[in-house]
Image 1 (cartoon, rainbow, N blue to C red):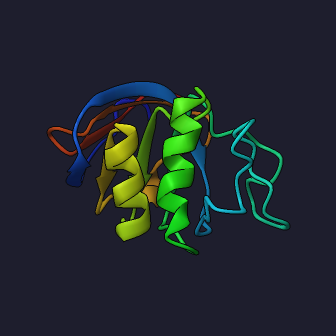
Image 2 (spheres, helix red, strand yellow):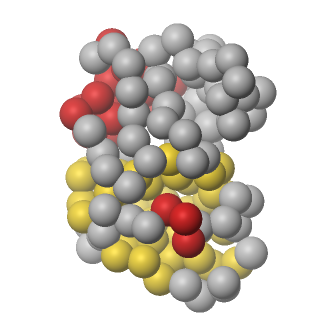
Length: 134
């Protein structure tokens, strides 16, 4: 899978590189991710106990309260936010959070093609997500 290149839609520009943290389940940032540590705390979520900090966070879409946008910003301000966000369909909560936190964000990506733990490079300006290394 190394070298796979997927294209999507730019939500917020920028470039980032990091290990993929992949979930097939929607994620709530307000109440689902600890704002101090960046660890997913949502009970029974596939990422429960794992940190989003510095990772390319890949998930289908956000869920929950609009306060989730601020929660993303708070994570970034504390140095615990994701390096980039990749969604199948980015909704308003995640989009606003990525914008105010200055996190590169891309959607309309077939997230099933991105393996957990793979090194990803995100060029959100061009809407490109590339698997650099498995």
